[in-house]
Image 1: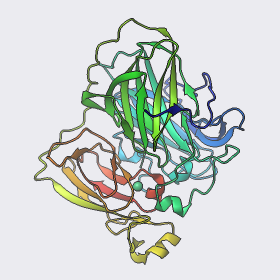
Image 2 (image 1 turned 90 degrees about the horizontal axis):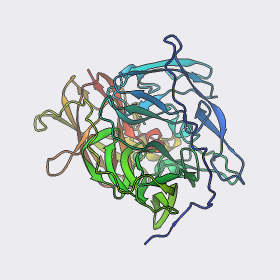
Image 3 (image 1 turned 135 degrees about the vertical axis):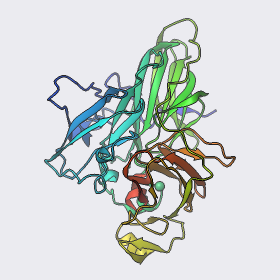
Image 4 (image 1 turned 180 degrees about the vertical axis):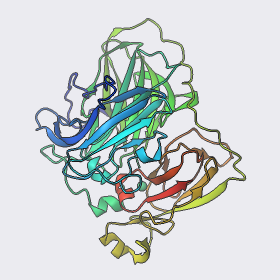
Length: 462
Ligand code: C2O
Ligand code: CU
């Protein structure tokens, strides 16, 4: 059995999880502000200095935004950063103009300027928000937060509902965010992998719980590039939703893999005894690290509750017939050890060396970055198939904006609704979705150095 330790230093940091504030909906004319600004956070143990970060409202993570399904969220986004930014509401099947993609759905919000985001929430579930301009730098500096949409009816009964944002930081010896965001080695390999893991901005996240407590844990991978492999210890339960979308049948919780941007909602019961601890464990090679701890100090009830029901489904349209659906191929190329010789860039063919000089090392269908023409154009309501072929030596987490898709498995059955899918090297993954949301939507790798390095395309729903 793997030995489980704290990562590097075991410092139990009490309380002080995230500064989680509930948005206020008071006053119809006063739209609450969401401010991106510089701040400080205690990411590392107390013998280190605080870390200078960029955060929404100056904190890491930013405030938990919370509303009920079919309500609207409005935020006056103010950019007090020294860099242009924007806010993308990841996983929300949102109207196109609110999707927050600088350069595609809106102009970047310059320093000192603001932008009003106001949108409906069709689905209940676990979502999140982050910048969509120089994302590889801005997220690495701490800009992200959770967006939780509560079920209109049929929410599961739990003792605690806990949002856990998992992040991977690259810190210097004095616990500051390492520069080098444009490091081409990172870009051409696995992305910016860090050396310090936090949960809700805390390197030793902990919460005391009674035995047989039932918790809904909302896990979000907010890292630039790290894939988390997780297991629970001293807790047993079920995965009830992925990427915000309920599973038809809750799945027993075993090993859980989360690519960047992926989410899982799990319902767990604490089964560790009083005086013990339950853990969320992250595996790296052969080592397991407790990244969140639940010390057990009392007993909530003598026996476990019975298994939960599935969460109520979200109103996502059913796929049309797959045989007649239009099918597009997307060949993913480039990166280190990928053998790519060159690609189209800004309308002309370029060799790898010239591409790399401009920071581009990946391509989709022989084209680095978004071209003038979309990968595909779909008519509103069409069922669309995209076969993504990972012809690189690296895993990628492919994310589609504005829609959730299902993977078409080799046997013709379809997988659960997702907005991000992890693809291993050499793997082909075919997805299908109903193009029911008009506008121009990104399809990109959510390993942020990869998308910045060229793994980005778009499609049009007209
Ligand atoms: Cu989480 Cu294109 O974004
Ligand atoms: Cu990638």
